[in-house]
Amino acid sequence: MSDTPTVPAPDLTAGGPAAPDWPGLLRQGTGPIQAEFRRLVERTTHYHGYSPDLVWGNLQTRAYAEEVLRLVVDLHGIPRDIEAGAAERVARAQYFGAGGRSFHILLGEQALLTGIGGPEVMHAQLEHLLEALKLPGLTLGIIPARARLTVYPGDGFGIFDGARVEVEGYRGGETITDDRVQVFHRAFDRLHDSAVYGDDARAIITTALHTS
Image 1 (cartoon, rainbow, N blue to C red):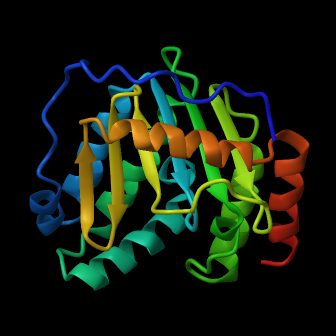
Image 2 (cartoon, rainbow, N blue to C red; image 1 turned 90 degrees about the horizontal axis):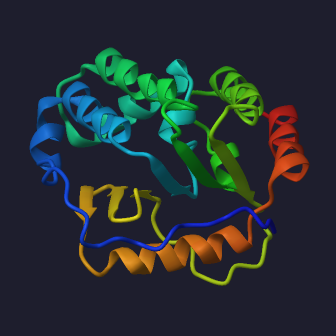
Image 3 (tube, rainbow, N blue to C red; image 1 turned 135 degrees about the horizontal axis):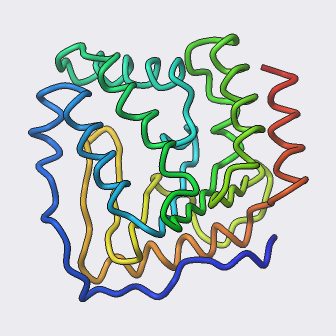
């Protein structure tokens, strides 16, 4: 557990751009949808995210991102613009430490173990995660596989400036801006209580690296 501050109170009156047509963007390929998501990250000052079984997008290496997007392309049968999509995805890393932005990320331990692209890709990705622990504006917590949870794991999600949630899955992207946002705030706080940080997080990543 950590005393790191968790999600700020949501401002559900906040305005902002309308939700993108995620299904329509997905049909165009990975490039357009990843470009739109990068622009969303660019507009965000405080981000809270949870990813139970994949490394979070802003922390992905180029090779890992390409492998993930290759799986998306194969599942949905969309245009195979994997390089364009991966370039937009890894471009999100430029926002670490920029303009006072903060990112509080929770990864399930399974995210360190899920076999994306084979041992070489995973080894490089885990090394990248270890280096990312030093990034300005990033708070990275790992939820150990055997940690006691006070909420069921659920889907991965991102909370943007406290007032907007994006949820991704096989069904595609979903944008939430109504009262349900508060449910994700509560879920994040409960997941945060089960996470470890600092040296403890580094130890879990290092163990996964040595077995990758």
